[in-house]
Image 1 (cartoon, rainbow, N blue to C red):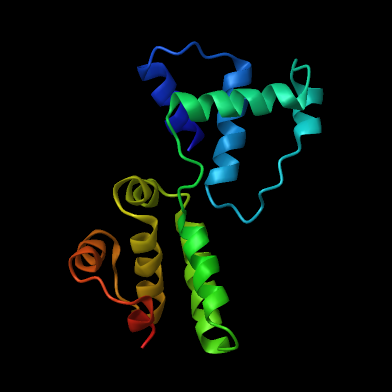
Image 2 (cartoon, rainbow, N blue to C red):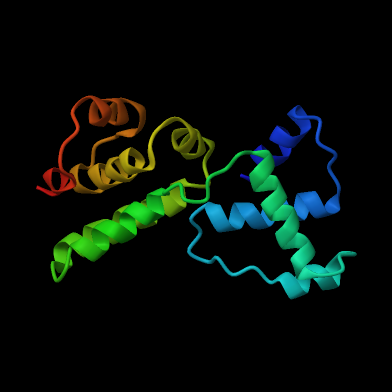
Length: 159
């Protein structure tokens, strides 16, 4: 995702400096649904000529503004968390959701999944990964188109 952000800045003729690149990387780690969302800002400051952590945060906010990014946008990880919370004490359902979330995190490093995130709603991406775990079928593009055409309650896909 950091490469995508930098490319967008280049297209918009935005001046790119070290602080901008660092902000792109930190934003990417925050919004790419990484299980490890810990960013060691102190280490970044020690390694690069940056005065304060606030300077990085200000640049992140500026980048979000440049891209007109709404931080309220839900991600597939939000949907996985929501469905896991809804599953109450159903351990079978929780296991399926955890497997689908793990598959998503593994696949999220691929360009194919990144394209899916840009082209389809997060809820559809989430349901597709759940479908993959429960049916052992391939999904991605064709399955997402099917989900968009035939919207159903999420519990339908667990049976």
